[in-house]
Length: 213
Image (tube, rainbow, N blue to C red; front, side, top):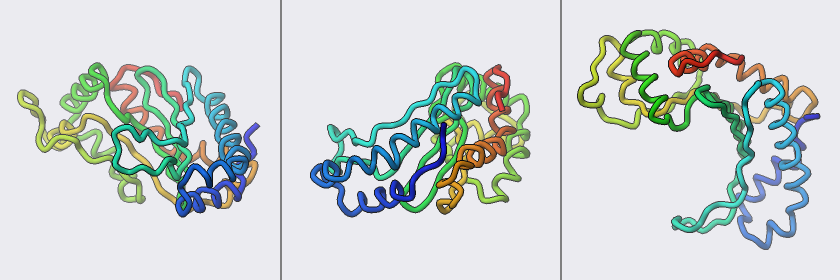
């Protein structure tokens, strides 16, 4: 049962920013386990119980240093993602000073990209119309990866803008809300994701999967 995160867990992330070393982690890892890791796994299970066919993943705290010039050993956030075949993912990121909740496709595979482009060309203004209220309400949208639409693809209206995308995510960032430390945390997060259901539904239909929210 998910009953929220401990305030000590968020404080731990803030302290980790200032003390990102293995020695400090070893001394304070029990606070991480109780205040972040265990509640994170409870939230993962809570959301899986809401979304049939979705699997959650709690990302490792340890950073992969093999190809990085930044040798700090740990991430200063707690991240979880839920995914299902040909359905838009959900994601959660608890940072030292904010909470990020989002939905979408972090990386389109070949089939998803083809379906996305087909729907953009067939309904060139539908995505812009759907996303306008989110943009006006302070949501963030991932930028396009391409400078121009791929050769051989064209579309009317806003289609050329969306054809520059190879992924698309929508999210909101908020100061860490007090509700996150209570038994209502799961329901509160769920309502934030429900608000993104029209966007998820647009992607799911492009990928020919029904909306789950």
